Amino acid sequence: MDDLTKDDSDLKWYQGITRYQWVVLVIASLGWVFDVFEGQIFVASMNEAMPSLVSADQAKNIPIYNNIALGAFLLGGAVGGIFFGMLSDRIGRTKTMSITILFYSLFTCISAFSQQWWHMAGFRFLVAMGVGGEWAIASAMVNEVFPRRARAHVGGLFHASSVFGTYLAVLAGLFLIGNESIQQWSESLDVEFVDKSTIPWRLGFILGVVPAVLIIWIRLSLKEPEQWQQAKEQADATPNQKMGNLGELFSRRYIRRTFVGVTLAAIGLATFWGVHIYGKNVMKEAARVELATGAGNQQSDDHGGMEAADVVDKNELKFYEMIGMLCGTTGAGLGLLSFGPLCQRVGRRRAFAVYHLLAMAVSFVVFLGSFSTQALYPLLVIFGFFTVGMHAGYAIYFPELFPTRIRGTGTGFCFNAGRILAAPMLILTGWLQREWELTEIEIGTVLSGLFLLALVPLSFAPETKDATLEEDL
Image (cartoon, rainbow, N blue to C red; front, side):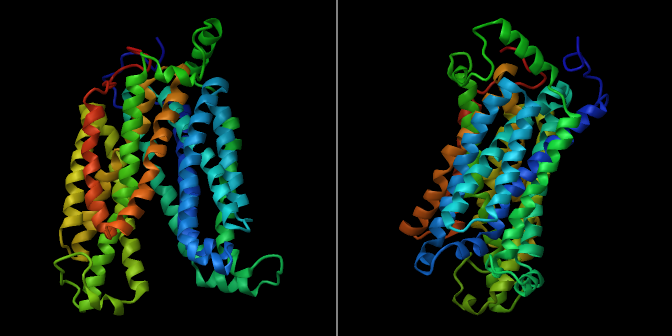
């Protein structure tokens, strides 16, 4: 009996973990950190990049072009996650992980040379293919390498590392893309082949090539998981058990598990784009009221009704908005870290249910209440904790739903098909703003009810706590 299946329940989750297993977790997590950075660098730079990629008569369409680029990223992530997930089942985890990292690193760097808005949108699609693929492969590999007592904990650690990718993008935005000194330096350069004012944001994208260094470490340090090697040998000897067979996800044996995974991911991603991202706006509106009235502790009866807000300095509001984003992101990281231990204690289904119900409750409190900026600091941390924390469960639970021969395929399909279903959220939020004239905070309030829908797939989801990866499959 190997180390991954023997009875070691008396050990703490981290006891007996080998150096190689830690290396796998570190490399997988770094890949995910840079995944998120490659995605967020566009968000940090789009207000500078997109205006420089359009003509004067196209300027009015910049918001549309930004949404097209964001939509291309969601679609590319779905395509890449499914394609590279299947490829990893067929040719191996380490080889495919190297390809995905090279993919997103190369195309993020090439994005720096965009000359038209559609160049950027096209490159975002290609970047996202690598990003979506890397997550599916890394999460599958982490689950296959670690013993079952540690899977929930390391899965949470793996997904929580995404917070550092967001932090890196914020730092790039503050100290490179939006840095006045960098802008002055670029204007002083004696170059004619590029608009000097665009150099800062182009440098931000060039940084995207750095993760390619990980490929060397992967090739030197990682080997294919034993479970994958055994599954490959068995598949080669058994004609009806193909590696990476997408159609098998919809067989009678696995379709329920596929539905559960896709639905959970769709709800999580839809609420991220429709609820979580608007937490920072609550801080912004609270600051608008306080700054407009000149009283730091004065509250308003509603989030956005101060006409005097016109006199508020936009830079101050932007500062509070970023502080709100920082609080929410920090809470998200803590929630992601905490989800794994909770999974191990109460089971996957109960952990998902607890987080979704509390996310809905906290969201209603944040969006419907009237709070000072001081009160919102801890409240937005709690808000981020529950609205994003359950995302760690995707890296823990999805790989446990499928056997090794289709684990990369199933994990990638569930998470990234969820992206496709969540993509209309960008359209819906715009429609609600235009047709119903809802504010972003009001949109967050309405869409907070989506968290409750998670109870539907959870009602018939299989419990995988303490199960070996092949058990009951």
